[in-house]
Amino acid sequence: MTRFLALLFLLMATQAGAQKADNALTWGFTSEVETLDPYATAKRTSQLVIRNVVETLLYRDPTSGKAQPLLATSWRWVDDRTLELALRQDAIFHDGQKFDADDVVFTVEQVKRKDPPVSFAEADYGYINRAEKIDAYTVRLVLNAPTPSAVDRLTQTLFILPKGAYNPQSFGRAPIGTGPYKVSSFEAGRKLVLTRNPAFHPAGWGAPRLATITIITIGDPQTQVAELARGRVDFLWNINPDQVGQLKGAAGVKTLSGGSTSISFLSLDSAARSGPNPLQDRNVRLAIASGINRTAISEVLQGPGSVVIDAACHPKQFGCPTEVEKHPYDLAKAKALMKASAYPNGFPLSISAFTDSGPVAEAVIGDLREIGIIGKVDFRETSAWIKDFFGGKLPASIVPWPSSGVYDVAALVPLFFMGQPGDYTKDAEVMAWFKEAGSITDPAERARLYGLGFAKIARDALVVPIMTSVTSFGYRDGLDFVPPADGYPAIAMTGWK
Image (cartoon, rainbow, N blue to C red; front, top):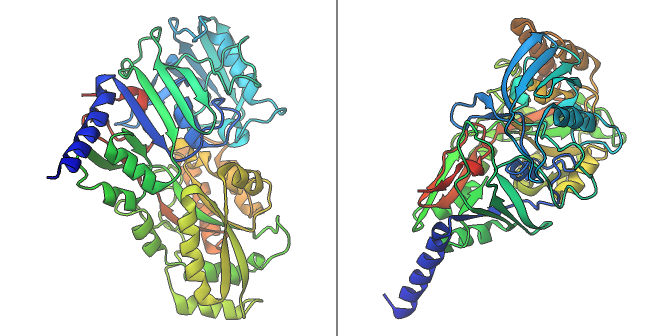
C-alpha cells in the first residue's frame, strides 16, 4: 500500500470514528428542508425530520408497526365517532411550558383553519371535526364520521403545537415542541443541527441516545455515496438500488432494505382539469396501461421487495383489493387500442415528476414512445410540483405517495379520488363508493365499497398503478439502527453501539 493510500484510509477511519466518539450523527438528506413547521410544508420528508422535535399523540413501533403511547398515555372509543385520549402529565415544551389538553385543542383548531390552509389538511385531518377538553389531561377527538383508521393516523400526523407560543411566521425557523431534540441551528434548505433535549419525558421507546443530529442536504446520489464511504456522513435514507450496489462492500458501511407504505402511480387527467386532452379517451388510457412495462420499471428502479400493483393502493393497506382488472405489458394490445382511439397517430405528452420520480417518468416515456405517444419529462423541484399538481395544471404526473405511513386506504382516497385537489378523475361513482366506505365501521362493507371503487379505477385506467416502493438505507457500521416497518426511520431511537 502506498503511503498516500495509507494516509487516506487513516483519514477516512478518523472521520468515521469522530462522530461515534462525539456521540453525533450526520444524516445526508436528499430533499431540502425549507421549514420546520409541520403544517407549512407538504413534504413528508421534512415532516420525518420534524417529528424529532415536535411530537404526535401516538407513535408507531418501528418493528411491530403497532400504535404506542407518546403524548397520549392511553385511548378508548367512547362511540364510533369519539376517541378519548388520556394525556401525559410530565411532558414539557422546549420553552418550559407544560403540555396539557389545551395544546391538543389548540392544535386541532389550527389544522382546521382555512386561512392559512394546512398542507394536505383534508387528507390528513378531514376526518376530525373538533377536539374537546374534558379536563387538563383528557381530551376527546370528535370525528365527522366513523374512522377506524384514526388511531393509526395519529401515529403519523397531528403534530402537537404549544398554545400561546405558536407563531406561523417564526415557528418554521425555531420550532418549540416536546420532542427528544431541540433545534440548535437551522439554515433553510442546507443544514439543520438538533441537540438532545435534557428535559425529555420518559417515553415508551426509551430516551434519545445521540447528543447531536446534523441533517445536511446532498441532492446528488453519487455525492451521497461518496460522503458515506468517506465517513463524512453516517446515515442515508431512501437511497436507490444503484446506490445500494455501489455501497456493497464499502469498508465500514452497511446497507438495509425495509418496508414501506409508498406506491407510485401515473396520474392521468381524464377529468380535463388542465384543459381538453387525449387522456379523456378511455382507449388512450387503456393503451397507456398496457404499453408500460411496469415489471421492468419495478425491478430496475426499486429492486427486490418491490411489487407491481394493479389497484391504486398499497397491498398492506386495509381496503386495497387483490382482484381488479389487470393490464399486463402487451405492446400489440396497446398499439391496437391506440388505433381504436381518437388519436391513432399518437400525440405529444408531458409527464411531470420530482426528485426520485424522475427516472420513473423517463422509463414510462421510453415505453410509450413505442405506441406513438411522444413524451418529455417535466421535471420540477418538489414544492413547484406540489403547487401545480394540486392546482390541477398537470395533464400527467408520476405520483409517489406514502399515505403518511397509514395502513388504510382512507389515507389515500380522499386526496386523489374524492374531488379534492389531487383528483384528476372526478368519477361520480368512485366518489360515492369511497364516501360511503369512509362513513361506516363494518370492515366487510368498507372493503366491498373500496373494492368497487378501485375496480372501476382499474377497469377504466383512470390512473395507472405502477409499483410499491422499497426503502433502502446506507449507514456507518456501529450504528444501532432497526429498519422500520413503514419505511420511516425513527432517528431519535438510534445510537452508536
